[in-house]
Image (cartoon, rainbow, N blue to C red; front, top):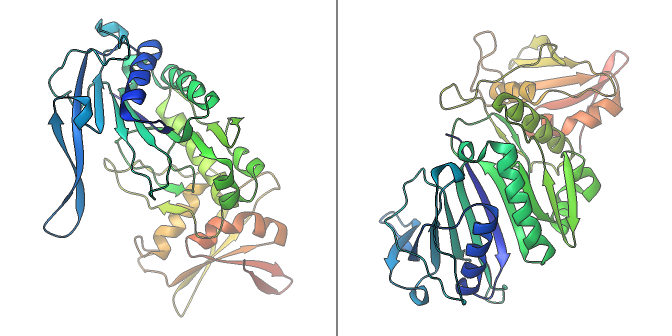
Length: 353
């Protein structure tokens, strides 16, 4: 089982209009719904002062702010009744199983009273029932294109759900997503230009003020993780300072085993006291980059999650032979707390932002 989630924020005048449209689209791109339920979702305050969403089943659409639709994959022989005449005419079923394929249409709460009316569309499916990641994403790309061309998409993302945590960078407007729809002005705030951002993805297409990007669409899980790590590594090098979250290695089964490169770019050259300070030398060609797995190892050293030769280090310094390479590679290194230097004869100079 490979659970996946497509989550889209769409402009819509209300849950009734969005629900009728979603039922039609679900039938065209996936399968006709076989059961539906209405819910009223409220924020519930817990004893510790925190809040959580609490949903209560209700009888009809007028009292609801969430519509839940259950559907079956083709090999399961699912059938149902489509919406007709603008009326949600579906059989009511029990609460769907956690591993069932379902679509949620939920009223979105805007950050301000003047925010446009919108809904969340949340599709939760088992990719294996739909032929794997590539065929599943083809359906979602077709669906999202319809919404993008209509100008209703405020944002969207598609990613696998659950499973072991992958170490490495999670840059802004990327994370673990295989497909994203993001506003161009948001991209420019985080990365300077749209061209730099889309260069880290396999494909991109612009729809007015929104750009859709895809990457790492692979059936093989190891290849998908490797390509996702490379893409995030490229984004981490061009993101604004300290905007990338680095996930430290977590031992299996909770985490994905860290695959280190056969020929690492970073080599431990000295350990200096007091501290100790671990010093690394970086050797790269103009087309090579430091593997994100190597930077994750440095992060573990700096955070004292891992010792070096039985000792916790007080810091890490990385030395380059030329300033151009140092500036190209420095953003991830500095984000995890390493200092970056360029050698100049017998001396060295620190590179800063």
